[in-house]
Image (cartoon, rainbow, N blue to C red; front, top):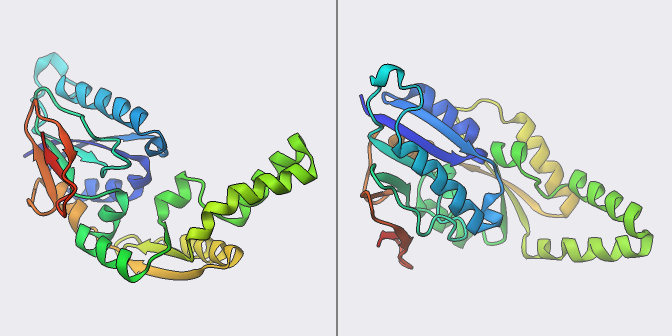
Length: 247
């Protein structure tokens, strides 16, 4: 039985937890807090620290009887180049070929590229993004406005909200990624629909797929989906369709 150490963003908590419970491999998961991609340097440092821990072996090594992990599964895409330069001293790393977690939720980089072309201006929602992030919504708007109002007064609050909301003009659609195997989407559908209505966006559901993550968590590493990085090597962008390469 393969022993896999999974280090992933907490935004994938529900999906990875489900697949880990069904995996044929031994799975040990560490989730890093959502939002580290906003500061790529910090993401790289925290991810590297967890990789270094994994190289030290399974933490519950009673009487030195536990075997080492076989692979480190990195549950991140490029994420603003946050994973660039990370390396493992002892164990091979398996990294998905994707720019971010949306590729893993949809099931392939090809499908991500297809939807990117066919549905430009889509802001992505998922169970993890709704549960663990601060998605554009009426609640987010009202909370920010209240904070600014109390601190700066009405006129300045209106101005600050205008500036804060300006980036949302690049979007026109709220896209909810759903997995058939997770029968818990009524809440997420309602939240995403309400957010779309508040922001005057269209709403669309996209059928995601567990296939990519499922194969990774069962020790099936297909070259078109993942990059296997040998010990001592680093991962860097390829600037091509394969997204990442070994340096």
